Amino acid sequence: MKAVYAVKQDKIENEPLKYGDLDLPAIEEGQVLVKVQANGVCHSDLHIIEGDFPLPKELFPLVPGHEIVGEVVESKNRNVKEGERVGIGWFYSACGQCEYCTSGRENLCPNATVTGINRWGGYAESVMLDGNYVSKIPEGLDSAEAAPLFCAGITAYSSVRKIGPKVGDRIAVFGVGGLGFYAIQMIEAAGARAIAVTSSHNKVAEMAGASEVIEEPKEGYDAAIVFAPNSSIVAKAVKSVKPGGTVVVPAIMDKIEVPFQYFTWEKNITSVASGFRSETRSVLKLAADGRLKSMIKTMPLSEAKTALMDLKRGKVQGRIVLKP
Image 1: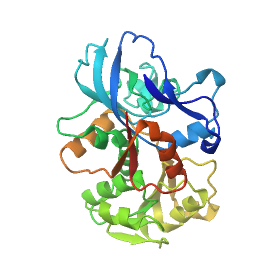
Image 2 (image 1 turned 90 degrees about the vertical axis):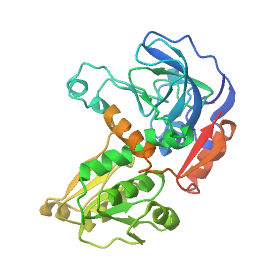
Image 3 (image 1 turned 180 degrees about the horizontal axis):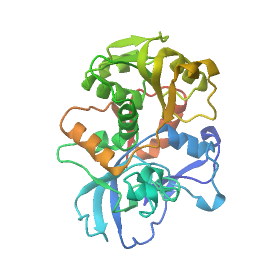
Image 4 (image 1 turned 30 degrees about the vertical axis):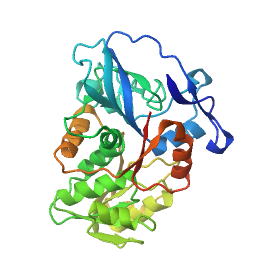
C-alpha cells in the first residue's frame, strides 16, 4: 500500500517523512482492515513527527494519523461487517479491565494504545483497526467531513461538556482553529454565548457563529477553553473567568504558569484526554443531523508534508483532510 511514514523524529524541514510502499501484516482476530477514504491532519501529528513526544526507535517506520474514516474491506470482528464505513481517533484500544475501562472512561486507561503511534495510522491507503473501538459512520455524513470529528470534534465536545454551558453563559474560546470552530458551534447551540479570542482567525470564528470576536480577553466570563498551544494564554484565560469559573486546557504545551492569586477565587483548571466511544458517537450524530458543520480543505495523501508545513506556519483555517 502507499503510505506517508516517518523514518525518524525530526523537524519537517529535515525530511523525516517519506511517501512510498509499506506492507500491512494480516489482520488479527478482532481487527478490521479498512480502506482509508479520509484522514484529518491534527497538530498532534506534527508533535509526533517532530519529536515533541519522544518515541522509541523500534516504532519506526511510523505511519501517523488518528482522524480516520474508511470502508471495511475485511473483518475478523463479529460486530463490524465488510462494506460498512467506520472511523477511529486517538485511542486505538484499551485494556477493557481496569477501573477506568469498566466505568466507561477508557480514554484514561493506563494501558491504552494510540493510533498513529503504537499502531500505524491513517496516512495510508489502508489501515488495520481494532473493531471493538471503531465507530460506524452515519448514512449521509461525508467521509471527509467526518474524519476531523474523531479528534478535533471529540476534543471540542469533551471540553464543552466539562464546562456544561447554560443559557446566557459567556464562554471565552482562546484559539480558533479546527477545534475552536467546533466548540463555538456547540456553545452557541447550548444557548450560551461563545466569545472567540483570536488575532488571526476572525472569519473562522464568524463562520462558526461566535457571538463576539475579539483580540484581547476581558474579565467576567463564566468559563473558558484554551485551544491555543501557548502557556501565557492559559494565565490570561484564568484571569478572565469569574471566581469559581473553570478553564479547560485541551491544548498540548510543555508547562503552564498561573499566578497563585487567581486560585484564591477558587478558579479551576482542568484538561481533556480526547474522548471515549459514547462521546464520539454523539458527535457523529450531531454532524449527521446537521447540527455540527466541519470546515475542511482536502489534499492528496502524497501532499502530507505540505499540509503539515502549512499547519506549522499557521496557514490552516479549519482542518486539512488527506485523501489517498
